[in-house]
Length: 306
Image 1 (tube, rainbow, N blue to C red):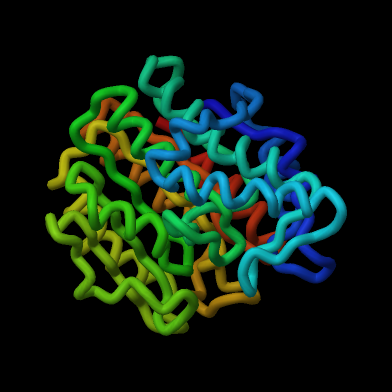
Image 2: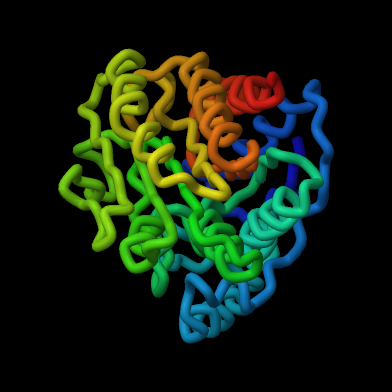
């Protein structure tokens, strides 16, 4: 398995006490030390790749804020801040997904994990949101469609918060499948089961607080995985958020560490059936450090076991 990350992602610094801090990535990387991973440097994303998801006017509008942030933090939305290191971190987080897609499509490995921050799945085409600046997984997905000529790409999102930004992209792109399990009600308030996309390429499985392992696995087994397999993607990307863990302070989904290993095995099996095992995962949420570290390590360890 390939691992894409970069030290600059530790220099993206929201205010003290903010949930999305550099300690999250340090905890994940420390937990992955014992795994047999091909570690690679996350490159800068090319402007062309980002512009497939975010209009040039949005990319350009960020530049004055990035420049101002060199002198002190700038608040982009109620939850999203940038600092002196944020521009490089954001560009490399998006670049990690692009590079991982390129490597997997070139058969350098079947699987890749992008250990990145800032996360991305809340970022809308024209606005930052929910700790996210660029929608990393959507940038990787549209890169796969356009640069590699694929006809079907899937994104599965098991972060406890609905990936509203990724869904926005999928709703307008019938070649992109998007499926999400998430807690509802909860931020950002989107992701109703009735939201299916114009091409019926969106599957939402909203679950109540306290749902727990059995209910979540049932949603995966009866809604997400059958729809994913029926779509027959040529590549699967995963928004791997680990904040559905029972220890996470921002939600109450009540999952266990083993649930993420189970998800890895199920997604890997589908990838083997449908797309030669090609699967790229990228880090999203997870805010209790021991739970995040343990869950990420369990997820990757399960992917490594064929």
